[in-house]
Length: 316
Length: 84
Image 1 (tube, rainbow over the protein chains, first blue to last red):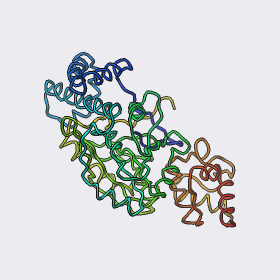
Image 2: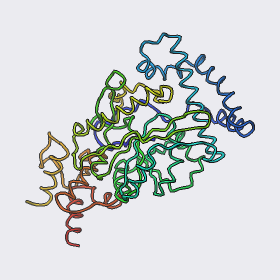
Image 3: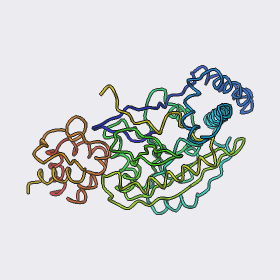
C-alpha cells in the first residue's frame, strides 16, 4: 500500500520497492506445501529458506540493517544476525498466513479485534474515516476482517507489476466491497479519496512511507533519529472533516492475529497546505508506531533506509 | 475583481507559492504537472478553498478533471455551478 504520489514539482527518487524478493517458482513451491501439509509444513520449509537468505544473501540481509540498527542499537553483530533471522522468519510466517487466508479463506485465521465498537460507532455516525496503517504486522489480514463494518473499504495501492500487496489481494477471498485507488492515477487519486470519505466510506492508507515531494513530508524523531513521515493522511482528513484511526494488526501466535485501534486522532478542519500545521498529528502517529515496534520488534517491515530516504533524484 | 484574478491570488496565498505573482500564471496553462506544477495535495487544498470562497463543491474525480485543467477552466466551472 502506498502513500499518495505527487504529480508536481520536486519529485524525489523512491528508495524502496513493493516488489517481492521471492520468485514465482518459490511462491508456487510454498503454495504447494501449504496445500499438501498445511501451515506447519510451510513453516518448516521457511526456517531453512530464511536461514539461507540470512547467511548467503548479504544484499537481502542488509535491507534489515537500517531498522534493526535503530531498534537494537547496542546489539553485537552476532545478535544482529539473530535479529535479522527473527525478523525475516516472522515476515515469512505472516506471508504464509496471508496465503492461507487467500487459499483457504479468512476462517483459517483467528482474529481478535480491539476497538470494534469504536469503529462501528464511526460507521454508524455515517462519518467516513481514514484507517491509517503501517508496514507493520499484517495489514492485509486486517483488511479481510473489515467486513463487519458493512461499508465499502477503499485501499490506496499502486498497481505496480510485481507488487507483493497486489499479489495478495488478487489471491485473497475478500467478500466485501474493496476498491483500489491507484495513487499514480490523475492527481494521485486525492479527489477520489475525498469523494469516498464524503460518502462515509473507509479509506486505508499507510502512514510510515513517503512517496513524493519534499512539500509533503515532515521530518520527525523515530527510534532516535529524524525520519521523513508523510502528512497527506492528515491533510485529507482535515479537508474531508473525518477522523484518522491509527490501526495495527499483528501476529500473536500460531494462526492467531490481533487488530487494534491504537488511537483515534481528530484533525481540525481546514488546516491548510503547510506541513507544519500537521506536525502534532504526525507526532501522535509516530508515538503509536514507536510503541508498536517496542512491543513487536520483529513485526515492522520497512526494508530500506527510511531515515535517509529523501535524496535528490540524479535523473532530474 | 475578475474571477480569474481572484483564483490566482487564492492559489498563491493558500498553496504557499511564495515566489509567484498573479501575472506569472497563464490563464490557459495546466495547473498540475508541467504547468504551474501543483501536486496532488495541492488539489485537496484547492477543493477546500473553492468551496470556502465560492461555495462550489468539486465532488469527484470527473468534476476535478474538468475543473482543474487551468485557471480558465476552473473559473468556467465555478461560474457554471453558481448559475445552475
